[in-house]
Image (cartoon, rainbow, N blue to C red; front, side, top):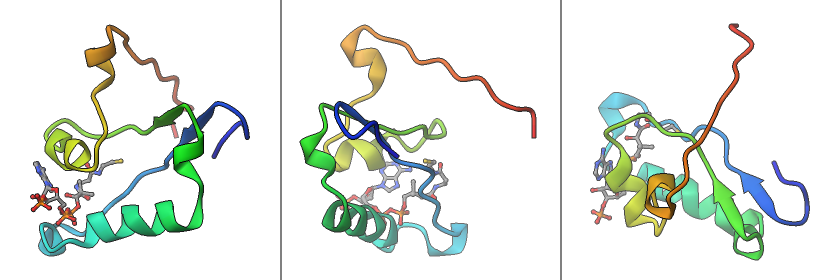
Length: 78
Ligand SMILES: CC(C)(COP(=O)(O)OP(=O)(O)OC[C@H]1O[C@@H](n2cnc3c(N)ncnc32)[C@H](O)[C@@H]1OP(=O)(O)O)[C@@H](O)C(=O)NCCC(=O)NCCS
């Protein structure tokens, strides 16, 4: 999802626990990049659980805290 100008949001990337660490997550991320021009946006943003930072860092992403920023979320409660 994007504003077609500055920022793009990548919704959840999920791999079944019994199939993790087989390269599936990297493949899913590559498929997104192959089909959508992520690199044309200044901000590429996603939300992840704690403990998976190494996965996203291996894909060249940086925790928002490294920019001196924080992130906020409001949920519908559903
Ligand atoms: C995070 C997740 C998507 C990664 O998918 P995956 O198929 O297990 O990852 P891959 O096998 O493609 O791993 C790609 C690289 O990231 C690394 N990596 C994967 N999970 C990691 C973790 N938890 N911590 C550190 N590094 C990790 C792998 O070692 C691999 O590195 P390499 O190429 O140098 O060997 C998957 O573990 C998952 O669904 N986790 C639970 C749900 C979640 O938190 N999703 C994020 C919400 S957006």
